Length: 126
Length: 135
Image (tube, each protein chain N blue to C red):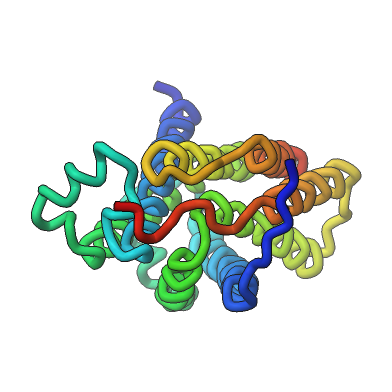
C-alpha cells in the first residue's frame, strides 16, 4: 500500500475512535448508561463494569489516547491539506453515534450544520 | 423548523473555553512535531515528540480540556456541543496566519464562512434533546 493510502486509513481509524471516545465521555458525563437507547442500555447495565458512569469516562480517555497516537502518525504520513479536512469526518461520526446510541434528535438543521463544517474545512485547506 | 433554545451560560462559557484550549493544544502539538523530518519512522517521531516540552504543554491543556468538556457534556447534547469545536479550526487558522504572515485566500475566507454558518445552524437547534432520566 502507498504511504498516503496508509495515511488515509490511519485518519479514518483515528476519527472513528474519536467519535466513540466522545460518545463514551457523553455517557460518563450524563451519569452512566441510562442515557443510552435500548437495547444498548440494558446490555450495558447488565455488563457489570459498564453500569458505572466513571468506567465510561475512563474508556473515553483511553480511546482518546489511542486517537492522539494515531493522529500524530497521520499528520506525519499525510499532507496537512488532506489530513485536516478528513479530520472533520469526526463531526459526521459523532452526529451518527449521537442519533443511534444516545437517541439525540439530530434533525435536518444539525445535519446541514455538520456538512457546512465539513465543506468549510475542505475550503480552508484548498 | 427552527427552535430557539435558551442555552445556559455555563454551557456557552464551557464551549468558549473548549475552543480556546483546543487552539492552544493544536498549536503546541504542531510545535512539538514540526521539527521532526517527515522521512523519520513512526517510532522516532514519538521518541522525539516525547522529548519536546511543547508536547507536555499540549498534554497539560488536554487534561484541563477533558475536565471542562465533561462538564459541558453533562448539560448539552453531544451532537450539539461537539460541532462548536470546529471554531477551533478558525482560531488556529487566524493564529497561524498572523504568526506566519500568510495571505488569506478567498478559499480560506469561504471555508471560515461555511464553518461559521454550520455552527450557527447547530446553535439554533435545542441544546438538549434527551432526558437524563430515560428509564
